[in-house]
Length: 104
Image 1 (cartoon, rainbow, N blue to C red):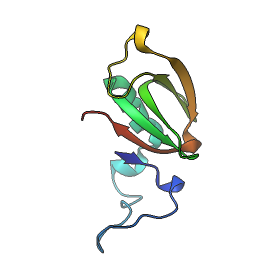
Image 2: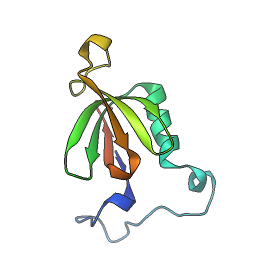
Image 3: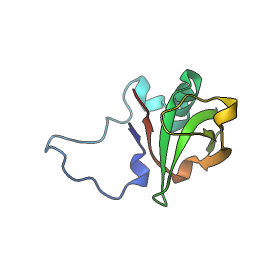
């Protein structure tokens, strides 16, 4: 599961040693949300995208831009097939709260 830290207000139920990842050290500090989303788009995973308004969408990421991703919306956990795509949604990354891969 990918959680966008800038989008959450609080987290409860974590251990006392939990914390944010080290920033400014190593290659992970240079990776952006776009890098992660492009990787998920390349592997064609079915995902559930949770948005800032508490709604969610199920589908497959088709394309990632500098501040958005394009999601082919289809049934949860299903593979992306042209005949199963109900719509294509543009999701601004600023509205993205979390993303979870289905079945993986």
